[in-house]
Amino acid sequence: MIRLLVADDHALIRKGLVQLIEMENDIKVISQASNGEEAYKLAKKFMPDLILMDVNMPVMNGIKAAKMLKEEKHPSKVLFLTIYNDREYLLEALKLGVEGYILKDAEYDDLIKAIRTIYNGGVYIHPSLMEEIDNIDHENLKKDLTPREIEILKLISKGYSNKEIAQKLFLSEKTVKNHVYNIFKKLDVKDRTQAAIYMLKNETILQN
Image (tube, rainbow, N blue to C red; front, side, top):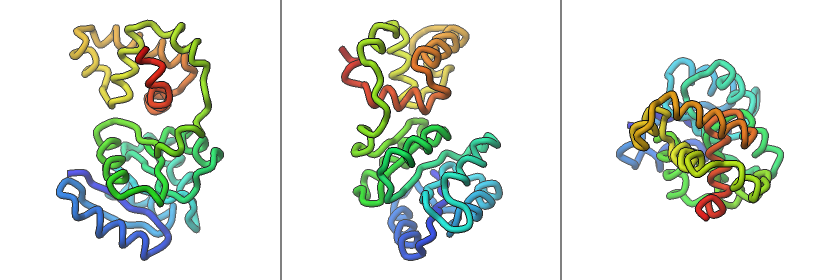
């Protein structure tokens, strides 16, 4: 069961989301917040698996709430649900290491897919936002990453842990850890979320 915290300052939107989401058998909304400060406090109190949070809220916005939680290494994953599709908000969210970013005009099925993807260790960025992510040098990416590193990067993007990657590829966990370190260094990323986003953005290139 996916334990979810929903944070949105518009009561009608928040309650509508809760009613729809709770129709799913594998998702339970355990708490609701009307601003970022409430979301922050309730996340620490109830420890949800995932926080579905609006970006622009009173008292404290979603960006600041997520930043505080991430700095404290809080285990809850964050999915931003917002009307903002501009580059500035998206990049700020990604720098924080949040696991997902989806627009409020997305289809309901896409929202549920995002929640499940993130819960299972993946990353979800609304398709219309992918072009807003910084382009990287595709040729350098192909040239710099070894076939093994590309293989591991693909598994990272699917939410596999180092231990799971090691088991799947018949490698030691230490070897996988070294590969992951090299991947992060070559792509100039700080964490698995950012590495997965690069993979999602350049999947066609990396398949060749």
